Amino acid sequence: MLGRIAGTTSWAPLSSDREASQVPGVLAVLFATPLWYANAVHFHAQLKSSLARTIGPPRLVVLDTIGMSDLDYTGVQVLREVLDEFDRDHIAFGIARSGKSPARMHESKRSAVQNWRRPVLSVSRRGRHCSRLEKSGLLT
Image 1 (tube, rainbow, N blue to C red):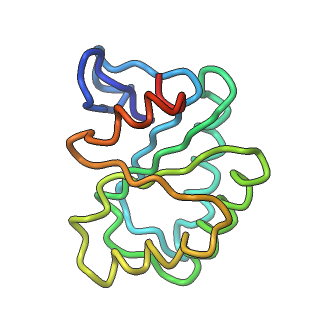
Image 2 (cartoon, helix red, strand yellow; image 1 turned 60 degrees about the horizontal axis):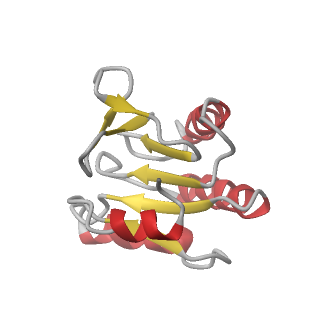
């Protein structure tokens, strides 16, 4: 789980940065490994566990994909299941830092979410979209 560093647009692991704190209703997670058949179940379980620890009812989940260097068919299927659960629970979803991946990987991430019924937020590395999220009430 990641927390926002007060007064900045930066996020850091809650477990290692004392200045980072959870934003109520927002879950930011870093899954720093490929999402594929060998760990797809772990990804889903870790995400559910993190959702249960979110302060307040979750309204937004941001998945930091900088370390997700591969996404296979099973990973796509699990990600789609997660998005269906978010849709059912009225939780917005965003992907952060996906642009540094190889083009093929970036396309796989996009294809995993392209048929989802709700818009997917793209959160820039420098936090350019944070002010839009704040105005929308998703990020306070």
